[in-house]
Length: 153
Image (cartoon, rainbow, N blue to C red; front, side):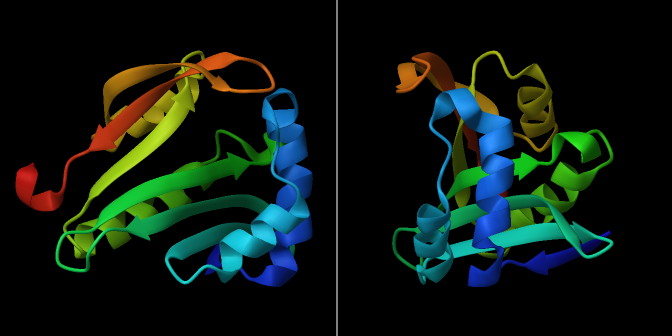
């Protein structure tokens, strides 16, 4: 498996995976990924195996340079490749970026996604609040989770 930065050429595959993973929650289409990859304050990585993209994830770098915050925008792994450490490879990189800038991280996760919640908790995220009907298509609730900055831990 190879961890690499995503490019505009990966947008179609990311949208395909998004449709598999989040069909009932308004998956992002290719055009949204194109915008995300082009934004200067976003950082996206993916995992490739045998020439195929099997995972993607990204964060936004928000706030002033001397006091940034990071927001996990999305993370997903092809169902055929889950539970093999793919998400952890990407999370390692995303939290490294936040730690290098000593910034807090935030994310939203479905309240019923136990596997994702457990992974985020392993990285030091804690539940901050519940957002009712966060996902418009399914009306599912989400937890907002926070990971304190390196200097706050």
